[in-house]
Amino acid sequence: MYSMTLHKVVCLPRLSRVAVCGGTHGNELSGVYLVRELLKEEKKAMEEEEEEEKPVSVVLVLSNPWAIQQCRRYVKTDLNRCFTHASLNGPLSDSAPYELIRSKELNTLLGPKGSPEAVDLVCDLHNTTANMGLCLIAYSDCDWICLHTFKHLQASTSKESYSLDSVGKHGFAMEIGPQPHGVVRSNIYTAMKFGVQHMLDWVRFFNSGFVDVFTMVKHIDYPRDSETHNIIAAIHPQLQDRDFCLLHPEDPLFQTFSGETLRYKGKEPLYPFFINECAYYEKGIALSLARKRRVMIPAIRVQTEQEQQASEQGFGSEEEE
Amino acid sequence: MSAYKNSVCFNEARRVAIFGGTHGNEMSGVTLVNLWVKNSAEIQRKGVETKPFIANPKAVEKCTRYVDTDLNRAFSPENLSAPGGDDLPYEVQRAQEINRIFGPKGSPEAYDVIFDLHNTTSNMGCTLILESSKDHFNLQMMNYIKKAITPASCLVLLNEHPLLKYSTSRSVAKHPVGLEVGPQPQGVLRSNIFEAMRVILKHALDFIELFNEGMEFPPCTVEVFWVSERIDYPRDANGNIIAMVHPNLQDCDWEPLNPGDPMFQTFDGKTIHYQGSGTVYPTFINEAAYYEKQQAFVTTRRETLVASAIRKA
Image (cartoon, rainbow over all chains, first blue to last red; front, side, top):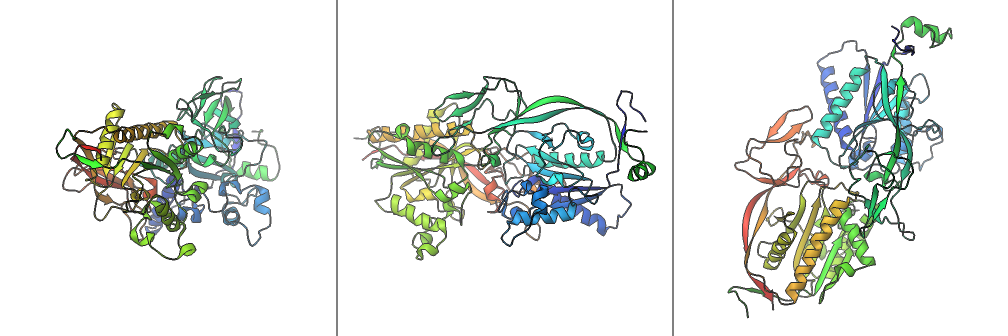
């Protein structure tokens, strides 16, 4: 029961409801097709009356149906930026953008965010044009549930998370690339299918150890013309597709259209990711930079019923055994 | 006097246009044309007026393929003569305007050459698109480009098919040339793709300069991939896609597809095989913009065309 290291075992409530969301961005197609396929399988299972008591119930959601229908990232505003408490609890005018209305619907379905009724875990499926492989992104670096599920994360512990995966008590985005927006590549789809399956399998078994995490440090924008603000260089060919390969001071960053190389002028070697993500041109991001560190995570296991009652009555704390 | 019998004469190519942004999210052409509008030194050639031009500025501004309808399908005779002015879809209005500036299509006043710059999410490498198997000027230009970039490769796609051919923006000119470079996601600029397109255009303009100076180009053969058939994704009764391009076919543009080879993979993992009667050469495999046009890929057959000798009149 106790791990052999100095770390105690942390007891956490069971994960009884998990949400898998596709099409938060309507042109990131792996998640759209995967959720549709899972809905088909679910419907088939219900018709064949395979209704056993499942340890986990899975809610399948197509987050932005209008954007999916048009195969666009969003219709009026980026849905995956609409989930701060302020946005969710603010007033809704008649002229509110579609995605703001939809974010409240999703909050009712999967949340409310911050309440005991919220689903236990949200897995939000994305694609990127950047060569990041399979990457899991979370908004906290001390959420043991998420850290036990994944290898890479993007920490913003000081800022509240604005994204869909923050509605559940635990949540993360599963990001797979490279895949152009509006395209479904069979190898990427298959990788996501296994990723989701693996994640759902894991939910039943907690594990321990350490993980290497990448913590976001800063973004770098494209060099731009001072008058027109148009970009004047592209990601350097030696950097293109080299997500998570260490970038050293003086390494090539950009190549101007007249052939000049612009180099990384930072003092500290950092790890680049989201290199040349299409949707980030409008957000002024050519690439992001992260530091790598090792995080020890304690063993965790599911609370017993007595432990759950005890914590609800306020007796003892998580650290007592 | 010609050194060759059956040499074909053409007028000097005096007016040339380079279109970028016919599709507003195909970034190589947009970026190159914007560069050349600011500074056209790179595209100047003796005796030629070369005009860089953003074909669909509204779509470029929104970084989308089109606003109302695909500009590169809009140049039909019906559209070009349609009345209605401001009530017409934006791209139809734009097609009429382009036809006024660079055409009229089919008339002696039309531009000599239009290069139309495109990107594709398909793994097509550098591709030149030809619209007529009898355009000896274009055939000779493409032969020149292919030789000039050796050992790098540049293939020729011939889109001359009674049903599948469509009315492109470049079709306004006497000699339309399509340039398609991939793979590149929509809305993204990759430096290797950008440079490849730039190099091809350089050689194309060099050819025009040499031709105008009086060089005679001897007869030659040009291997082309002739468009044969459009293959759609398998769909269910509601029209939803039920399978993806098979991993064995994905990225294999221009490679032979034999009867019995894997073609699609359903979302639950089953393989659908190619059932044609002979070997074909697929291209435009998994192009993002063609999902809505019901096209997973297009099949081609390999042919060798003979180009006559050409010289200026």
